[in-house]
Amino acid sequence: MRVTMSAATEPRRFRPSLWATLITVPAVLVMLGLGTWQMQRLHWKEDLVRRVEQRLHAAPVPLPSVITDPEALEFRPVTVAGRFLNDKEMLLVARPRQGQAGYELLTPLQRPASDGGGVVLVNRGFLPMDRRDPASRPDSRVEGPVTVSGLVRLPHPAGWLQPGNRPGAESWMRLDPPAMAAAVGLENVAPLAVEATPDPARGNAPLNGIQPLVELPNNHRQYAFTWYSLAATLAVVYVLSQRRRSTP
Image 1 (cartoon, rainbow, N blue to C red):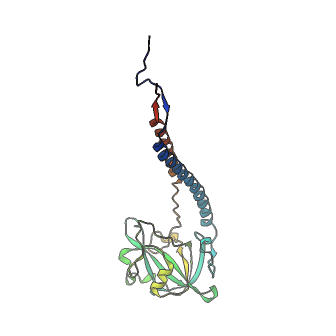
Image 2 (cartoon, rainbow, N blue to C red):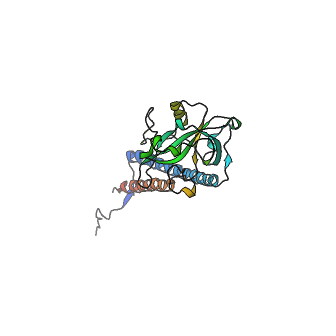
Image 3 (cartoon, rainbow, N blue to C red):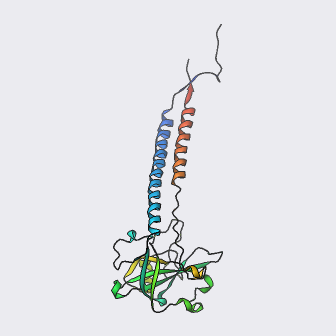
């Protein structure tokens, strides 16, 4: 008696087509490469976070008179002395604070000749929008010698969705010491800013510095998992789709 097999039970063998192979194999390799790259980025980011934490908790040091390596100072607590150039202050657009829109006030600080002279931009903290006019806050125009304690921050390029600075605008969208210096006619300006440390006794008062907070998103593990998962899924689909019935 002759037994025939139905199409559902007929054995299948992996017999991939050329086009499916040419498309799938490079795609899987690219996804695996992207996943591995994200794992490398994960190790780099974790090391960066550790180094930043160490810097944040270090004792303050005087800001060098000559800054040859700004990146070596980023996130470091420092002190800097001088006199505020109140007539050249600038507004930096800030995130809302307790639901209130506003700015961060950047005031250039003229350093004494004993510290090498030059100018450092000092971020003095949040300023509500209704107090952007200097006439509404005469107490903010500090005169005489001051010593500021704060955290060094460096400018970073704008993201592709982040609006850039507009020369001549009332406020700045991001930190840019060279452009800011040119806009107010200053020379010898340090390529960084010092974010003043808040005074706990003043609470949430305006112009009470910037709370030391460094946000370093670390989503590389999730990205790596996504790429590896896509590679595995595509490989499974490729194998299953290229199984064909055996010919008699």
